[in-house]
Length: 70
Image (cartoon, rainbow, N blue to C red; front, side, top):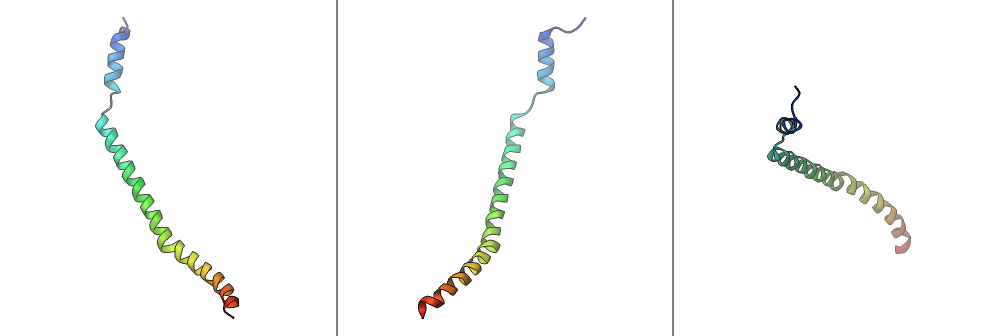
């Protein structure tokens, strides 16, 4: 004879139970990885992109500065 609905519920909940602490640890690790990737992007912008942008804008403004100073 098949199991009753009550026994199936208790069996299903015990088989598929999860640990909240494991989920919290995974979320903490995911958050830490996200913060590290954001920090790496900030360093990329500061070290690579800003100097190129400054060089480009400096050359553009120096062209106009030449006409203003004369």
